[in-house]
Image (cartoon, rainbow, N blue to C red; front, side, top):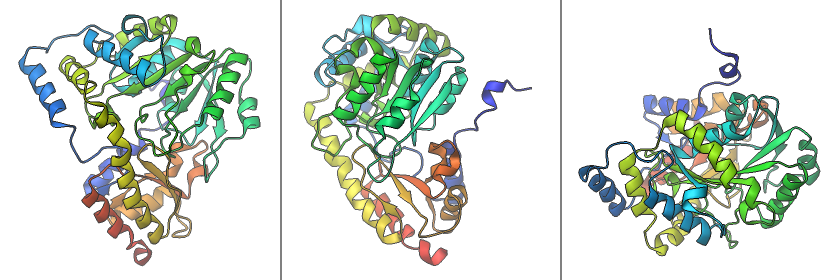
Length: 386
């Protein structure tokens, strides 16, 4: 009875892992949910917005104060000097809906979409739902670099778009300006659009500034920049994402968004505008906040027998467990949950074919320090459990 479009993929493995972790009382280092709250002033702004009556539909593509804050941030942080709140900004129900609305606005059945892998698990289903054919390009460990020749070979006359994610989920890779320039040149040569998911833009540990591909020469008119409030303000349940795109593409995104969800929650948009007005020190402090957690957790992984490179950004790490077990990724994660009480995400969730990730697991470290120590001590018991 089901349509063919939903038979090409399963439900989210990440959310499934969360349910399994809850069932066994495991420390959940799978789904990207921090166990600490946003700043008090952000929470209070949300409560105040509800009390002040912002409880009905908002403007479909986002309230004016939030769009203005997003446009200013796009100009000052992302280098998009042309960004205008009315012409270029659309607020959606999370970066996930931003991507789906963008794909619906741009991609026709039979088009090709280039996707780096390992990839955030929504990218492939979004391409398939629009009838596109994914073209895969490998990010190669240990530094998760790509082969320029392989990237060029993925482009062709049917290429409509490329999806990139920097900093990257699940690897923590931060694309360099040189790498983004290579991508930009191919987009211009093949008349393709860059769909750039930059949700982790403030969480990176290198000395390089964050680079948005839309800021590079020739890319302003062919890039959709996606971000949101979830990761920056620890409000993953608020589902506030946004796109910054040229006016012609924005018009299509707004049409798709209107009929997908009508609009994002009004009071949370009001609070989102307040969040984006936090002092610069808050945003600058995110790097050290998450680097402390990374540097606390990774030694536990290494001592437990995993092979893992410190990520350059985001709050995930891909770890190879082949020295610990002959099980595949799904069986290993299940065993890890059931025996030592720690959940991760099977590596195959981020690859096509899935077997390419059979010896890997993704852990997230956006947790309180005591939570990470607890998880780390449990992981040290893995060898005995095996």
